[in-house]
Length: 168
Image (cartoon, rainbow, N blue to C red; front, side):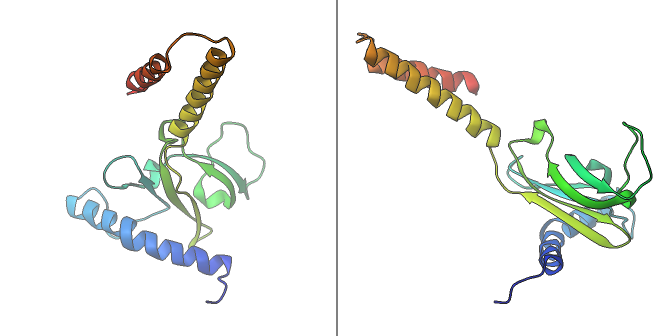
């Protein structure tokens, strides 16, 4: 298989994203009368792990934090950045409330060019929390062993299991 250029890779990813998520969502919204025909798309996002099916966001619904390079004259802090100012996306992350989800996000800029960013990892916050809990569990077990504590291991395990129930 030949190596893909960045432009060809982006095109293939976009083709698949439109085929599986964006176009079906556009068609569904047009049938419901909530999106005009033809649609004007400047951004689209699919969120994985937010429920049994991926969630599709279009245009102003797209959420995230980005570090961008823009082609605009001097701007003031807090001034809105529009997609037509976009030159390059250096970093894109979902907001904190969506941090456990994976995503594929696309932005149209410079006429009909598209930038694509994705991170398919899910449960990052949950995994970090489990690592922290595991570290605490190991520390407690080590302390118990080093001090020859008579606390039965089953009590430690029960406490750990209860911490799981508190999480949920």
